[in-house]
Length: 422
Ligand code: DSN
Image 1: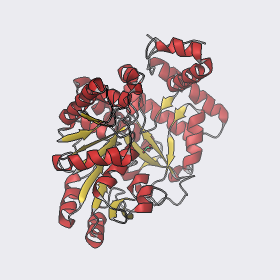
Image 2: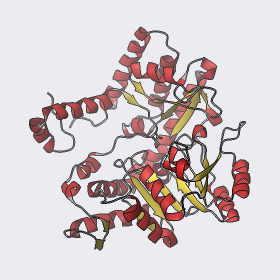
Image 3: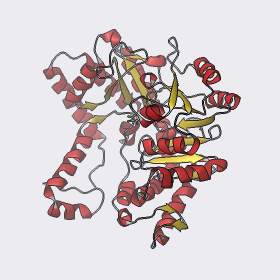
Image 4: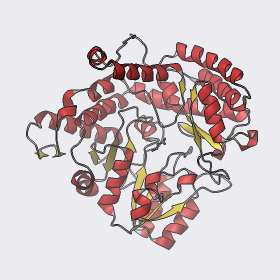
């Protein structure tokens, strides 16, 4: 076995103690290195973040918050968490930050817990139009325990239907309005959401999971000045460890902290909190800002190339790291496109498009994103090439064609390796 560690010498110990697991970790590293990773919500986090994740902070129970813990021995992790909180407040210009949510869904659950009672009304974007499960989908706690009302996109523009959102808010008087989702290629008008929330007396929550990295890199406008509370995951464009975070206005700080712990979670994952803090320092650099701008330039170039091959971008394009492509014009389903691309070494996901006639398990679209390939150092010429490869794979009719594309993918990623060998 070729044990090539990138996160520290402990890999050799793992390889000795548990070769079976070590082999699986190396296989996954090999998978990341060998294909094109275009899932819009994924990225390659740094060795420094991985080092914090693999640290002995994993051992520590630290229920509570810095200076107010339920366990002894928290003097070091108190400093870790304080450092992370200060970095988050500075990076996002926020009054308050909570780094403890284990995930984006946990962060969202905490916000419901902080502001709502079961049965209260929430207004959010419909999942089939680009929303999220935790925004009131029937199968989620949010749809089971709360009265969720949904706005969608305008049929013509395919962008958020702000008129519908306002009209539904006036009609249903939600206690909370949620902006954000998982497949929204365009910038969101936070001022419009704020105006409606103020008009009906609702809390405004922005779920910024997908685009917070672009905000951190100052490449797009921030929701923080407009929202009562902003939730996000830390592992998408932001490029941190897998996890969640909340920033909010000072007046909501106590309610948010109490909702994360003890209402929704127990002990924080302090290795994850440390890794989030490391990532926040990385995001405060000019290099990260250049990265965020390049993610968008790459996304726009990729989208234009795909459009030139007949893969239609919904809303006509993208302002962000992701695009949603309608494949109906080329007569291929989302699931077939995902499988064909997978065979060609291109990892992406099928995705419902607004007003999709196909069920979500089949879908009429695919979603592509550029966070990972941009981390690898690829620029516009490379993503234009990737656009050609995706189109060829989607339109391919034989395994032989897809094997030939796979060879071109191999050649491209060999020039831009993920986790380069030292
Ligand atoms: N699963 C994430 C995504 O892919 O967008 C959202 O939670």
